[in-house]
Image (cartoon, rainbow, N blue to C red):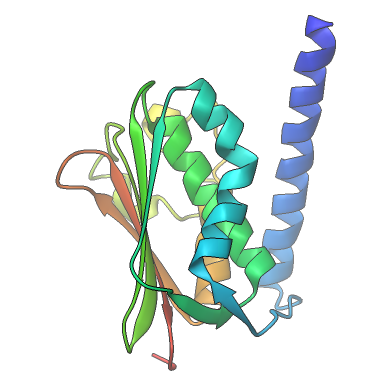
Length: 185
């Protein structure tokens, strides 16, 4: 039974890898047509947390969601959910047991912003400029990551009039800053 569970986990990870690579290739080829629907940040965050909720709980990581008002933007909920899920997965994998992941959402007249911060060790300065490159695996994570989740997330956000940046948080850990602009920038 233990081997079957391990095989199931490996098969699920392989399926995710193949689907993400295909979706990334479709994005780069311009073969994806994004829906233009109202995306409510509460719905987006809830949907993005669902696939990683059990793993976060098993690690004892505390999730903290802070939403100011009712932020929303125009975009494709399905693709944005997958992009945010990839960010959350990255944060979860780099946050030690009993750590914290904080998600904040807010809106202003120019853009809607989601910030996802973890309490991991952060990202080395020399790795920061490359973190969103396809197949780039920064040194502390090179053994188990594939280097496509963050590339996919950035591509999805950029194709929807947005930006995705990363920096080291002042309190330690990584901080992903996702913005969807209301007008073309």
